[in-house]
Length: 208
Image 1: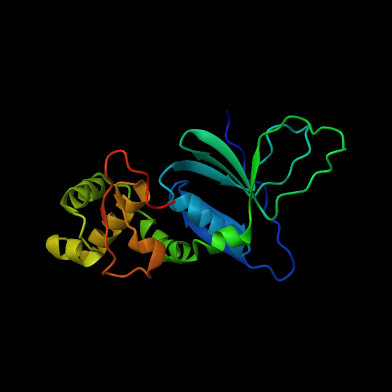
Image 2 (image 1 turned 90 degrees about the horizontal axis):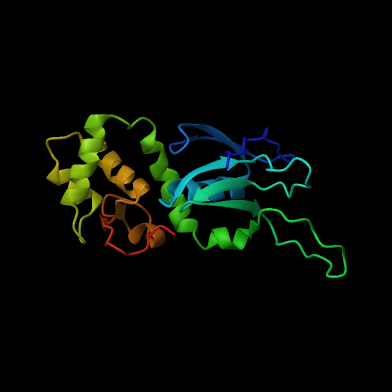
């Protein structure tokens, strides 16, 4: 299928606009409100989401659109995500036309991942401009060096001949790509003591 196109942003009175760099899209996205920002973080930081679109156009112009907040391609399958409560339909009403399934995401569901979201809000800005052959080689070497007890600080010291900021960014890139995982990021504030490890073969991503 053809990827949707992002519609112009609309915001409610006093709603904050967030301009953020999206590494997976290689462009800036504009998001309205905190919940849309937090849902964006979950899509951008999840390794199984290969691409996405904010405020996507609906696939059929003749159908009534539920105005989803995002479209995403997750593990090869397209999903549509909308913020808010699942609509209650009248069982006696006429059947709705067949259309893509929309998953509704409530604020409470986002709040369950608030530590992980806040951590990635701090980590994603590191990935502004990192696509070079030498950086990709560093990412591969960092992944190879990581063991179950490695922390950011351990890896920065292990690659002391390389700029520590570049090593830190390589660790973040490996987490972003799903080459490394970190249980700490889900429950603790990110710092140099945050532990990372290689993803075990056949294991689910820790960043769900």
